[in-house]
Length: 120
Image 1 (cartoon, rainbow, N blue to C red):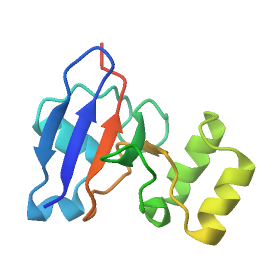
Image 2 (cartoon, rainbow, N blue to C red):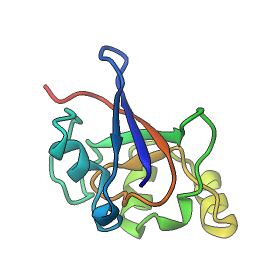
Image 3 (cartoon, helix red, strand yellow):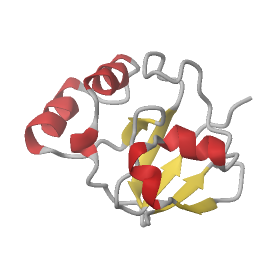
Image 4 (tube, helix red, strand yellow):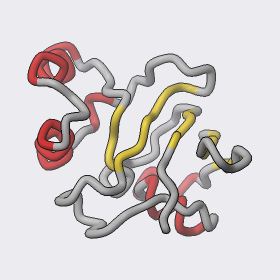
């Protein structure tokens, strides 16, 4: 079971152990289940409002870059979270992006830290 630490600059960290079925669920759906107030709007990867910063537990890079959807890559590029060069490295080298859309990111077998903006 992967450990997910939800972190916001104004709140205490909230630690969750994702259940085995979480491999089919998005970070946003897990956040909603545990009442973590991640900001979101469309829930379909179109608006970019649920953008989160993702690292491993210690703040280093994750191994989840290869799991980004084309829609997610496009939106992250449009909102300025990843550059064209970074996107190319992600695609060609299976590098991870530190920015993800919570509504698109599926939880994998890796302990992660997610820094988010709170919903109003």
